[in-house]
Image 1 (spheres, rainbow, N blue to C red):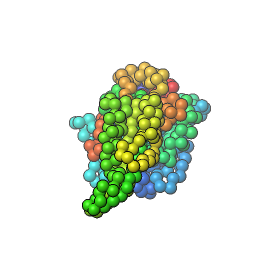
Image 2: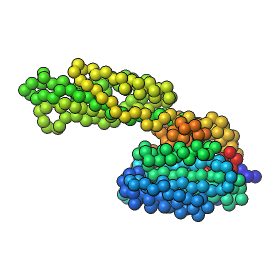
Image 3: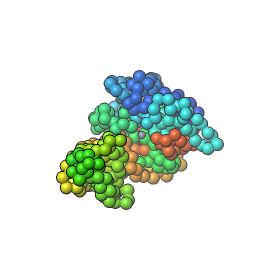
Image 4: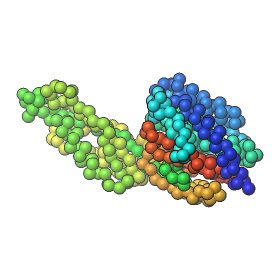
Length: 379
Ligand SMILES: [Zn+2]
């Protein structure tokens, strides 16, 4: 009966969920562009979760929107719901990419509709369902909403970890993926590195033979690094930026550099990538190499028992959960690595996140919202 009621509530309230999601999406919130703009978006959550009864607290920030933490209920801290309210879309994106609803396609579109404003509003309705049905559990539910996840959670990750350690479980409301049944049970670790090559500068017409070209060194290193990619999803090193010299001059520069994004499926592969990058030897005689950066997101492994519990609960709502691996990271990487029992990707489903075509599936929302409510109730 409880399951049927949760599902029915989620279905009956889909319209209000979608209109709330529209309001939320229409408050733009790029990670580090305009604090005042982001704070307006955060204020929306602060007020709405406050009205549900959460004791909301703002954690002030200088350059991004204030992070938000709230608690509802009495008793042991049981489940912490985690979500980021920032998006990758700059202010003004709504002009070209407005919130749109296309019932025939079963889709809603808009900046952050999938990643991850949809998941935050799902969390809101999951709690609301429990309150409305008189099912709110005898323990504390927490929420943490940060405003800088898309730029690396540099000001929020340690705060999230501190809170996560106080709770028995962490549910990350990031998008589930492209399928009704998907949740995220593993995420690659991520590193960002810059490799700086220093050679000897010289006139490129008069005495090119006197030069030791850092541009050539960097080019060779990039080709060599490509060979370290293992061809599967296990380890990938991808150059993302290259720099060197002054355009239009006849000079071999003294310095050139490149950055790369490193993804590894296991902690062992993260360590292996780190070791290889740190010990890179120059390929041209006379060049000096310097490496900056490091692994900034550890590998995420969901709590397998928590996943199995969610899978069992999901059946009542017509879900047959499957855990998937993705290369992209989330704040779940931090909470899982800190030892908190974590399950990720419980939010909305859809595709093309971070893209102008970003969308979420409408009819996947009710069963997945009911599942979140059930987890809050029975974990
Ligand atoms: Zn996200």
